[in-house]
Length: 385
Image 1 (cartoon, rainbow, N blue to C red):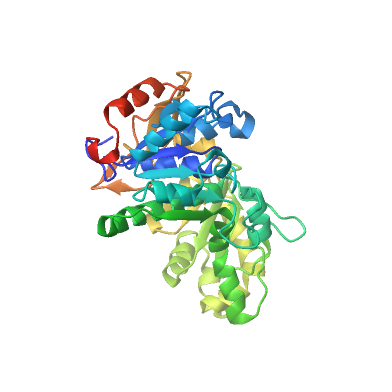
Image 2: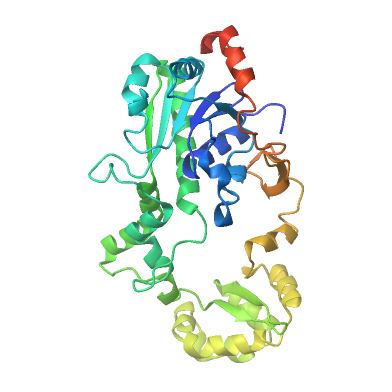
C-alpha cells in the first residue's frame, strides 16, 4: 500500500458476514481506513464456508483487524460501546431487529453517538418488503435480471455475487458522502443500502426502455442484435472468440483484412441497418472464415485493427492474462492459516498507482487484546491520534 491513502485516520467498526457488508469494509480498507471486524467467539460463520464460498472470507476481509466480543456479556457490551465511541463508521448487514435486540438500534446509536455514520446493508430499503431476508439470487429473480440473463422459462443468475459486491460499493458511496457532509454539519448519518434496489438499478435500462417504447424486454440470449457482427465464433484450433464489428470503419477493415469482398461490395449491405437485417446469411460466411484461422492470429490482427474482441475465458484463465499480470494488476495476501492467494487489485488507480497490496486475512481475535488495551488509554475519537 502507498504511505498515504484517502481514508487514513478513518476508523470503521464492522459487524457483518457473507459478502455485501464485508465487501464494503474491504473497499474501505484498501482506501486506507482502519476496519475493525467484531466477531462472535466462534468467529464469522463465513470463515468456515467451502465450495463456492471458500473465497468469501479471505477475499472480503483482507486487511481488517479481528476483535472477538460476546455481546451477550455485559463487559463485552461495554467494550463494544467504547469501541463505537472511537469510531467514524459503524458498518453492519444484519436483518432488521437483530441488532436492536442487542441494544444496538440505529436510532439509539445516533442519539448516543451523534457523529457516528451508520451503514446498514439490508435486503430491501424501507417499504413493504423491508422485513424480508434477501440473497443475491433472490433479487436477481425478483428484478428480472435472471430473466434477462437466461429466459423467462429458464432464468439464470449472473455468475458471481454481483449484487452483493455492488451493494458494498454503494455502501462505500454512501459512507464517503456522509463523511463529506459531516465536515460541514458535525453530524453523522444513518445510511440504508438495499440489495434489491441495487439490482433494480442494474435493470433500470430495460425498465426505462419499456416505459419509453412499450416493447417488453427481450432476454439477452434472444435479443435482436444491434450490430452487423456481434457474435461468438469457433477458431481453427477449437477455441472460442467474441468479435464485435460495430462501426463503419470496423466493417470495412474487417472485410478487407479477412478477404470478404463479397460482403464489402454487395449492394444489399451498404448501410449498418442493411447489414443487421442480413445477419442470417452474412454471419455464417464470417463464421466459416473465422473457423479457418487460429486464435492467436485472430487476436493479434483484431488488436491491430482496434476491433473489439475477447477470448472466452474462465476466471482462472485470468491468472495468465498479461494485462492482469501487469505491475499492480494482482495483489498477494495470506489467509488466516498462512496460505497465500492472489486477487485482483481494487479497480482504480490513484495518481497512476494501484492500491490494495499487502493486506492479509486476520486470525480470529488476533487484535482483541491490542484494540481493547487502546480503548483504556484512548477513550474517545477526538483524543485518538
